[in-house]
Image (tube, rainbow, N blue to C red; front, side, top):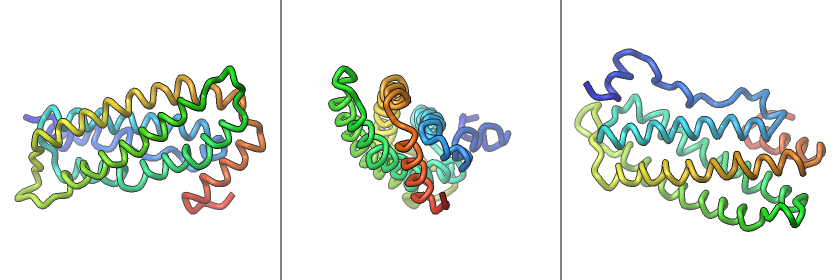
Length: 187
């Protein structure tokens, strides 16, 4: 029995790791970002599994498509519009963060393009509940996951560490407010 079908049949792991962090965590935006990075790692694991299997089902693909369409671009906005610019202003020369942030912003654009192609493949019309993935799609899923893993390691191990040291309480408060607003939540 294929891995995707085992998950569906047992009900285990079906959405685990893809649920959004609690809204209350937005009060601590760096912690929210870190929690969302865990979601991205779970998403990558699912994409690698689908690529390995060469198939998916609509039920498995649906939360992945939803994350890629809505949550991933919003996460990138949180970083590109809120965290990175403030961090650039607060960083010290010894942090050497500018080039890193430029590279991460490029990664965001690349992975959003890849996500669009993955969404297309997972939402294309198919005969039954089983989605058969072509080699181009499985290679794309693997490439997306590899880029994201490297990207997340840099963000977690460098960017968030420096941000925790350099951002001021008023920066955190403003970032929190903007991230809440982006999600339609009041401050």
